[in-house]
Figure 1: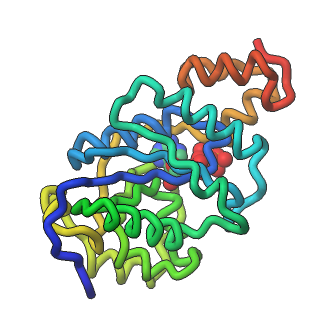
Figure 2 (figure 1 turned 60 degrees about the horizontal axis):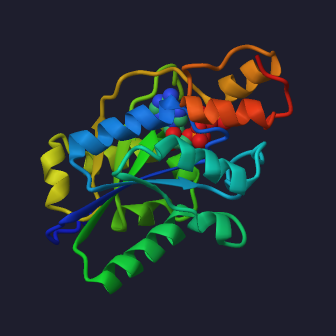
Length: 226
Ligand code: ATP
């Protein structure tokens, strides 16, 4: 097992996703991870073609714009649209390699935390070159209510090997650990929001008001809204 030991000063948290649309179940857990781990930067990274799932309803451009709207008032948060500009599927290992190259160019001492909701973490062994992720980032798992799937044995083995219980330790290492962050449980999903929109139900307070207003004003999901 390799755990990167370089001292890290710039800590980047990355939350990837389809964000179709972005909602408080993304924003609040990410903010709690940022605060708990004292991350200097929180990056929301919309995926263009998620390799493991059905095509998103909204275009990459609009999903990114909704993320922009959602984080506009958070000085620590940025949207990183690189995966939207890359041809083909967005593999996280490729993205992380690119980010490391940029950080090296800047001469920054960096650690990267890849933030995954628990459901996404359970699917990690299905990701392209997933073991390589640990040479590039820490994995920070945000608890997610209502997730019942079983943990694959190979993932359980990696978790046992790499689990870090003290988040302060993540700062001494640039990559390679797995930390599980308890967060305020918010059983909100983009699927639930799309379903509510399809049924002309209110989605108020499930996502930032500015995002809701844009969805309603432009009937982004094709339904008239209350
Ligand atoms: P969908 O319902 O379309 O599958 P989603 O709500 O799960 O979408 P994604 O964009 O797929 O949203 O999720 C991006 C990341 O945020 C994933 O790592 C996912 O596990 C995490 N996440 C999403 N919703 C929550 C939530 N309510 N609590 C904790 N983590 C979440």
